[in-house]
Length: 214
Ligand code: AMP
Image 1: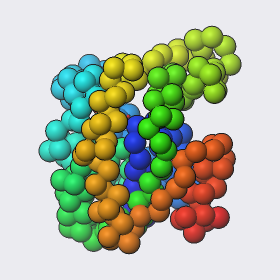
Image 2: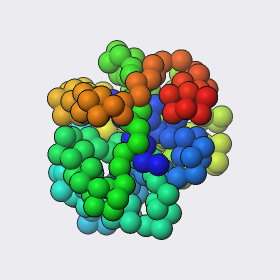
Image 3: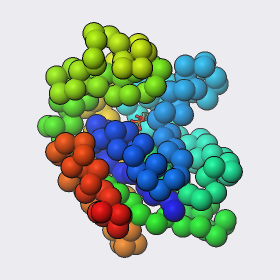
């Protein structure tokens, strides 16, 4: 089962991903998380990706495609994967289809979380993350239990690319380069559009229903 989680930055992909991956017993593969983990470790991949991430731009296709193809060969991804934040361009989507076809697999569903831009800006500018477990908070809508501390005890921080100046560019990049994938997967009959506004549980249930697991 290969499921793609599509949607603009701040749509709630990271929030929903864990539950979906668990439900289908497949690994959650987030390219953004992989880049951030590499950056934290100071690897060449992380340092290369940082140049693009800080500007709200996309990391070059060939680098991301190689990374995902490599990750999909791991034994835990044999039954499938939940791809969060990948593909983000038509070139990436084409390369993914090609790669899956070569191993006798295919994309099963493309879940697209829809949220209007105004709501995304409010969500992203108030978003805070845990440095240890990756949990996501919001300064107004879901503050951490204690100032600056996650429920796991980790440090809370604001992602560099969640600064308001970068958010505008990330949304522009999404509309220009990623949103054409909605039509792409729609034509393939794989698109499962989801209203991304509501409580975490409401949205999760909409996703399950769209995936036939309601
Ligand atoms: P995310 O956590 O998914 O919002 O990703 C954070 C940043 O990582 C993005 O703004 C891009 O700079 C980079 N990134 C993540 N996934 C991709 C991808 N599939 N293609 C290109 N860049 C990506």
